[in-house]
Amino acid sequence: MSRLLVLGGVGEALAIARHLPPPHVYSLAGLGRVPDDLACQVRVGGFGGAEGLAAFIREQAIDLLLDATHPYAAQISRNAAQAAQVSGIPCWALRRPGWQAVAGDDWREVADWAELVRALAPFQRPFFTLGREPLAHLQDIPASQRWTVRCLESLPGTERAEVIGDRGPFSLDAERALFRRLGSDVLVSKNSGSAATEAKLQVARERGLPVLVLRRPALPAVERVFGSVAEVLTGLRERGFVRLGETLDGLTGQALP
Ligand code: NAP
Image 1: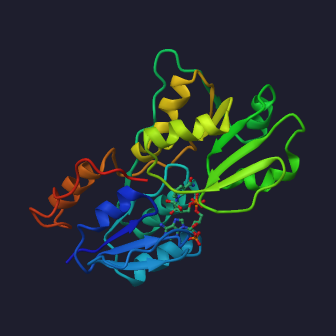
Image 2: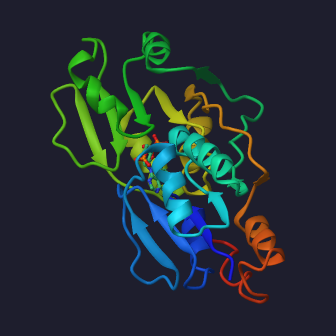
Image 3: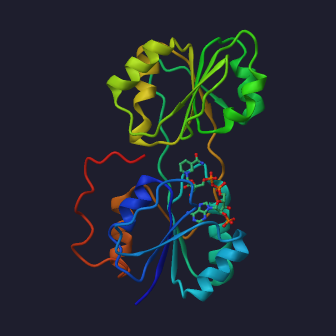
């Protein structure tokens, strides 16, 4: 039987892995929760760059690589494309579409941390929702600002920064209450495109707040690109990686972090 390697780390990848029988492999970096109820094999930890991944593909006789990592996890996506190419196997990717601003939204795209800091200058109470990067800058907060940083880590914070350790999905009501409590005057976000973390954009819209959006990284070209879990499962079923009838259960209405 042909063997699939899925690179995961987001909810969609787990949803795909739940449909895979035992020979297939689901790989995680090891930063988050590791599921213990999958039929397929689960491995955890880095491969050691593109060369390490190519060696794994060879040793484990992998026939197809599926990059289902987060849209900002650009390094592993580059490694995946390169390793698949040198190994002579196809690389497919699930590329979650980004969020789109609607009329009246004030979204300002920034390329990197330096640009973000400059764009933040007019604001006093930024709410960071782009992961752990702000934690490295808690000592650099201007005297005029008080930060809120929401990320996976729960940390004590500082005199000028509150750190909220939490993971999505976040409901609209909970986000409304949080924004009210914080009194944020600007939201800082990646454009992850996930339904599980989209409510904050709605609340920013309701409150007329600008959103500083960290630009998506460029990702490598691969053989096939899919926009949803259902499309990936259809592609896998057509190639015999998933059996008929194993693909459609539980795909609707789920929030994927
Ligand atoms: P990254 O910068 O692209 O990757 C860093 C290194 O982590 C890779 O070079 C690789 O190590 C290892 N790695 C990443 N994903 C892996 C996987 N599925 N299986 C095995 N090794 C993996 O990624 P990142 O932004 O640090 O994100 C790490 C993981 O968290 C990713 O799997 C991603 O899907 C998930 N995630 C990221 C974000 C985000 O905002 N960046 C958000 C939610 C979830 P080696 O080079 O040693 O192979």
